[in-house]
Length: 247
Ligand code: 13P
Image 1 (cartoon, protein in one colour):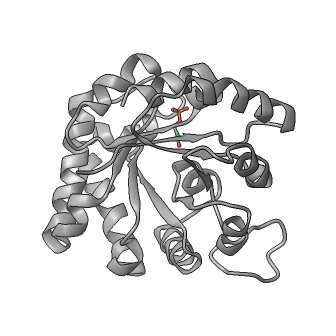
Image 2 (cartoon, protein in one colour; image 1 turned 90 degrees about the vertical axis):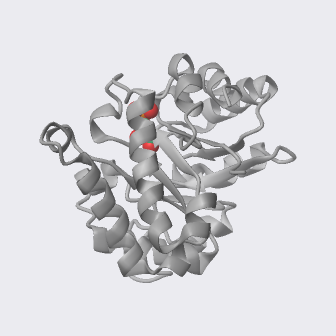
């Protein structure tokens, strides 16, 4: 019922020539029934959108400011990335929360901004290693989801996706076991389902954190893992195509 999704978050990587080569390498290898999303740095959204012309691939932004316009030097708004061809935006990535001090309030404001601009937000949540070791993983993740639902409102999440990205698995080579990912995804869906059962059934919940071609199939086979949000491995066009095709 839920169409799987595979998204490649390039983070702060890529230049014009690299992107053109990546697209030439990636596109011919695709054989996937998943919805595919590429998330380049904001300045390259237009280039990537143009390079994907005629292909069923969605382009997304990694971040936006909550305001539509204003005196916010160096920032870009949801309306602007939409204008550049983005249809999706990541909100609350752990690197934004960790390096840029984004609180649940800021994350919720960005969900509201995404909704206002007609973008699908991908709400990123996940616990740290300490939180997992203390046995608090579920509590932390559900608190992140609940805060945003309460502050932004259910209607702003109508077209949203959630990405469960345990912080200890991001860029470390360490991946959650498929059963552990499944457990957390089912916990999130269970929580959503108590107040919004229809939304819970159709909301894609992606797993992120050292997804590779070698572990994608096992992760994606879990019933509540609706695909992946891929960082490092999405920079390698061949590897990323294998992950897309693992659906
Ligand atoms: P890695 O796949 O490099 O672990 O990154 C995951 C991530 O943060 C995707 O948003």
